[in-house]
Length: 296
Image (cartoon, rainbow, N blue to C red):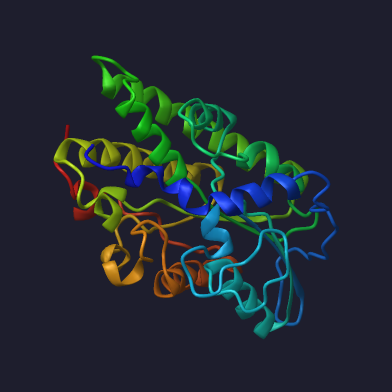
């Protein structure tokens, strides 16, 4: 690659440093009132798992991790306000900037010299509210960038496709483990996840070579396929991959990777109908957005 947009985690290094301090004794396991099948007027226990997206990084009002942020412009904060409008909500936002899904990707990122302060499996799932009625998850952005960087560093050698296929399978298995751990902690929870857009179509990747965009496409679409497979685990999967509007530059912040306020509003609108009903249609099996870059 001629430049380093995939090292986007450096953009929020200051947040990551703060998170490293907050992770010790963070007090994230407070109990939350959470009835099963909430009705209007009930308290909804909402736990959010994510990375910098969960704190609204790139929006006009990003949030400091693990703090109350009622005016935040990220999708988690927008959903919290909408839930509050229909009754009341106890929001536990576990999102950690620069976090990834699994210990495997965390170790890979650190080996590549990236700031990766945490992974969802070890630093977020154990702190989901035990009475949570709904959990949202958005995973794969940072993971895709780290896997792409590993290819740049020579991983896979002469069999990059085989290497990536193995990493994508492992990532999918780890996602199933994440779902299981959340349900062990909160048995009555509804889990609603967003799949991943084709990152080769995001503004930060536009200036990359065709070969590098092809690798990023292969990874991000592969991770979305594994996310979509979670429907077999009774997880509600909300589609971003095949939404044409999600790729508009007008929905991205200046770094070309994180959403801006408009992008976070789209994410919140995509999730909102299914938080309480869970009746999401299955993600499309195919669409033009799967091939925004040449195949490799």
